[in-house]
Length: 315
Image 1 (cartoon, helix red, strand yellow):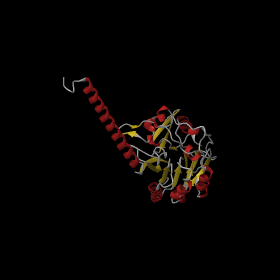
Image 2 (tube, rainbow, N blue to C red):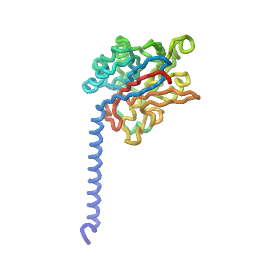
Image 3 (cartoon, helix red, strand yellow):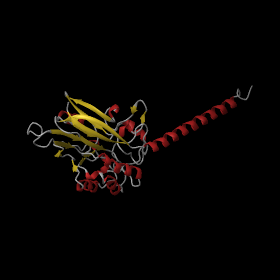
Image 4 (cartoon, rainbow, N blue to C red):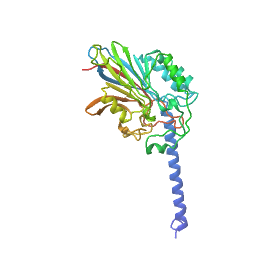
């Protein structure tokens, strides 16, 4: 009997096969991690054209930021955020999760300083209130993430004050009108639905049908849970802006996101789509986000993004 035919030889061959398979798997995993680490810094600007303004209005450029998840020392991210001022938006909308570290507020405000010179509105996400924690990534396949029992609190009041002192408007469970380029923007925002903190404030008084000025109703939220999208769609929003999903963060090329970290269908985890509820339809832009949790600093087939929406008159 040959050595290969001997039972001991077969055992040795099987063991070598397992070792080779393990080595190949480890190498593939390391390559994917290295690629994901690289891709997290490949910042992009997605551009969308949306004809929703009242007839006769000029175009309006809205820069949508979400899920920055800033960590001290992120110089590439800071430089890119500062460069976004070059697009000269008419309005900046920030849909939350700005932080990923207790000491990130000052460097984040410095990175956003050029954009804070433009009119803006904002709502918080859970990672503005609480720091992210180390989790098993597979837990995201079991449903939306949950807040730990003893969360590490972040200084959201100081970040909110920094935004507010620069002129950005806090829409946390609030509504407010902003005149811009001859159009009155009627905003309604909510606190983070992921934490079940949303409370609906309705629209500002004097909205469409109650005076002759052109109006646009814009809803601003962090996490695009279906119950919130249904509410604002049925409340006649002209546009809904949201984030939270990270676009899936780790996606399969040609397929897309595997999770959305909420009850939104995964194919809607990133991009501009129409949402339908009770016979009404509203365009919803879900940002793929700019950052990641500092405990999962990778992106695969899902590059970080800001979104520039150019609003034009209805046709």
